[in-house]
Image (cartoon, rainbow, N blue to C red; front, side, top):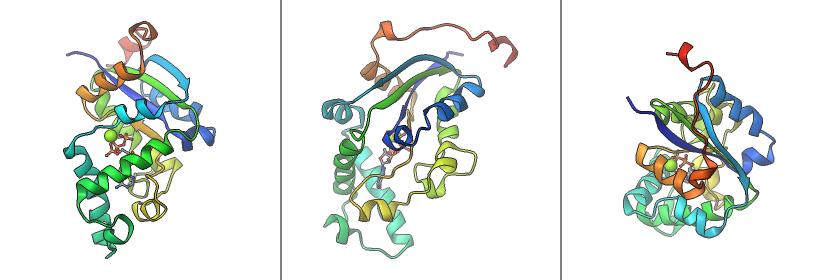
Length: 193
Ligand code: ATP
Ligand code: MG
């Protein structure tokens, strides 16, 4: 089996609330190896490149709104002037660019076996209202789709975590130079598996 790498970003709400240490310790305590860390302001161009630009991603994001609106009998057209999920996804991406420039971002690259599944599990559901207690989003946030969309902003959900092995590689390469990553084994690794 091969180790994988995932990118974590503590988003501006996590940074502004002073949660960097608490959040990073959750990844350390399950035994993931931190191989890179960085704190910096991101540019519009970097954020635009970070979030996908495909219709499939826009559609997934837009459908998150539509599913939630249907449950609450709300009309997406009132906020977005459309009920096309791709168009809604594009609007959310434009909001993300502003949100991610509210403060410096804290970046971490973590490495382990099945690391993608692990970082997604620890992060919890994208929608904080639905994120289980014990997860980062469930424990530190409670935002909802309808409140966020009504206020023309993305969900404030504390953390970004890569969601596929391929995205993990792409995102790590986007934010880190090879010389900023430090491969090594944790002293406790042999007791973990
Ligand atoms: P991330 O990529 O940040 O780890 P994710 O993979 O769980 O989150 P994505 O579908 O990639 O979710 O969406 C990226 C981010 O965009 C979300 O974390 C959230 O902040 C915001 N977002 C996604 N869908 C919506 C939506 N319908 N309305 C408002 N914000 C949204
Ligand atoms: Mg994602």
